[in-house]
Amino acid sequence: MGKLRHVVPSFEVLVNIMAVGSGVFLFLLLLINGPGVSPDSVDYIATARNLIAGNGFTTYDASPFVSFMPLYPTLLALLMFLGLSVSQSASLIAALSYGGMVYVSGRIFNSCIRNVPLKFFMFAVLIWGISIPRIAVNVWTEMPFLFFTVCFLWMSIRYMGKTTTSLRYVAVTAGFGLLTRSVGLFFIPSIVMVYFLRWKRAWRKNIFSLFESLIITCFVPVLWVLGNFIRADTLLGERGVSTYSIQEVGNTIFYVMGSWFIPTVLPDLLLTLVGAGIVVVCVIISTLTFFPHKTRINFPPFVVISAFTAILFLAVMSYSSSTVALDLLGDRHVSPIYPLVVFLFAGLIDSMSLHRLWFFSRRFIRGVIVLGCIIWLIYPIRNAIRIYQSLVRDSYAYNAHIWYDSELIDYAHTLDDSPDTFIVSNMPDAIFFHTGLTVHLVPRKTYYNSPSVPDNEFAAIDTALESGQKVLLIWFEDKNSRDYVYTPEELPNKYKVKTTFNGLEGFAAELKTR
Image 1 (cartoon, rainbow, N blue to C red):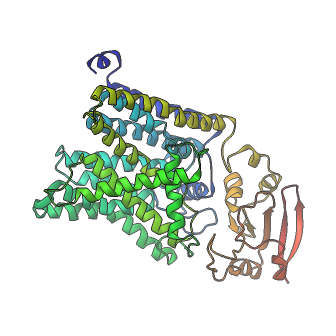
Image 2 (cartoon, rainbow, N blue to C red; image 1 turned 135 degrees about the vertical axis):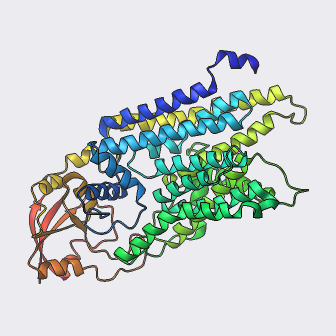
Image 3 (tube, rainbow, N blue to C red; image 1 turned 90 degrees about the vertical axis):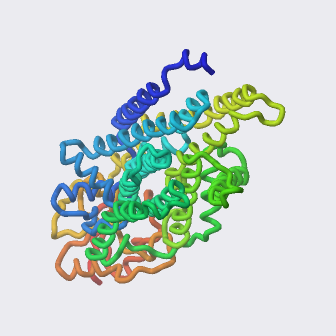
């Protein structure tokens, strides 16, 4: 191992180079065609534009921005106010978050992993991880949230190692995470866990620092949620009842976590079992850590924190997805714990590599681990290259070329954002992103994928007609991804539909009272 130290750069130097290089690479890559823009991306972009225009936290249909936390659109607005475009602002946030995550992760590996070759390979595993490229190339909150999650782990490690005696640093990173995504609620019990792991039986000694830290973490998010209730009579937006059972959610989470480590061409059951095994390991480590002192197994602090935090995150996500009408959890939603899982297994493998296993020598075990890492890295690197090559050819979702060539988008460009016109569409976010028009969603039959039925869905259109506004429907036939809204065929029962524009992908029509 001594020789290896002389033939490779210092790990800290490598971390610095990779952090800067990763951020610059991602920023330049995203500038080619711009980052991907999904429906919730448009919410962030519209809110940022409205903040700059002095309209407060309102989204593309002029309704209050209450379904998400405020930090990401605020950062977008700040960068746009400084003169950057939407694409440049989102790309810069993604690049800084990615580079920051790489830097902090490198610091964690350098301070916690003793096996030098393992440091390098697990660092590569994290940077090229299956879930990282997917979330880094879109206008999503996941990349900043992932950065704050890794920072939370780093501050917790320093607190546990008595490098800093203040829990405030842990609380601040947790607070930023909670302001980025509401699932950051898991940071609250995580802070409590970190405190008790540090002080153990002497927990009464600094109990006020725990209360202070919880206040630091929760103060601004609580103000935001209360503000939502005052502005829109809701804490975190309209939510219907979920159609997914806790078992369906759990199986999906296991499958996603399994896909991080073995190719998806293998049987689904195998991926699900691998993911379930990872969760079981986290549960076992968390449980054994809090056994009575004489029987407790002493895992490294960063392994315990990673395992416990991952379990808390999955608990919050599972509960949310099984009770509230959201998308069935996918790689994007579970991605924030990917670094935690990597740190956890890096710590366990590191401990194994420093001991004899049966009749195998430590050198043999280290060699097997290094060879396994080299072979395994082929899988995530191929995936990352495929994603980056795809982005060079075209961006994703609403930022793809197909939307720039849309006839209906061209038609919408001819319209004025006038108070005399009330526009509804099944793709209002896409129209806003490309034209800046204020567009409302066609009345819904249910809340998203929930059986719950919303009230007074036609009230906005009826009010517009009664006030003499022109109500215009823009319907995308071939791009309709919202099967929970009323179709044009169902609207004539209530309105007269007069077509004003026909195209290959849909049409525009004026709605009038019968």
